[in-house]
Image (cartoon, rainbow, N blue to C red; front, side, top):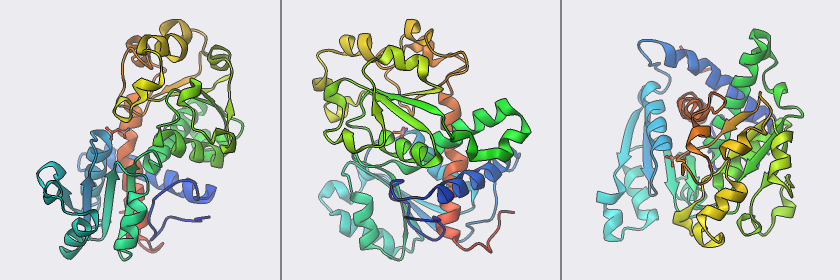
Length: 328
Ligand code: CP
């Protein structure tokens, strides 16, 4: 069990302790303030080099990691995979060795293969590797930013004292995750973070979109999505991942929406205080009705915004490492 991510890699949330998660969330809190300044920059990673390697498409993760690194004053090497020698057949090992030869301190990597980030951490053990999403496996910074967003919303509702009670806010919190659990690295990281922080998690999905080993997950599978809506303090929708063939796991998109989409009618069954989340990108009209996505209870844009302080915290803690280095 990892007790702190200081000076480490961040490959998964499965083996990260509650203390380590809270340390990231608390560090991100200090970076929220930096992001509100007119000059949004601190020298914490001045002179360090962060390589941004996205072998799979991304909008929010890539942009927020690169923004985070720049706000920490790191230099960013961003590989445009589509116009790189990867397209000529260069292996992952040689690609990483080439980038490492330029002198880097950290790699932020998204890859379509589960385990790719772990593999890279073995190729370059002297470099901090941060997994920005690997296949179906993990998306740890998404799990952290989703937990951060829930904590922030609950703390705001409680006033300043809520911020102080911090992650105690998760104890007994009822979180429902709905949709394509089988193909979702976000679900795997969210569940790890939420359960470690003390929440109860239920999942709702067509049987074909549940992973084969779901009975080993620390969640309850619900029979009725509609009844679970009344139970939930937080409902997290997942994208139907058509690029991973999810479309063939349901009879039709219309039927999926009818049974597991958060429609306007279903949203009315939620508690008035329920928080609606989606990691994006959304299939509006499939897993979430467009009008529901735009409700004030939906915190989807706040999730995106929180990607920057969370990724600043992760880069700062992993790369700067030592407790002596401070944010200034
Ligand atoms: N949530 C998420 O990972 O979005 P991107 O694919 O746009 O990075």
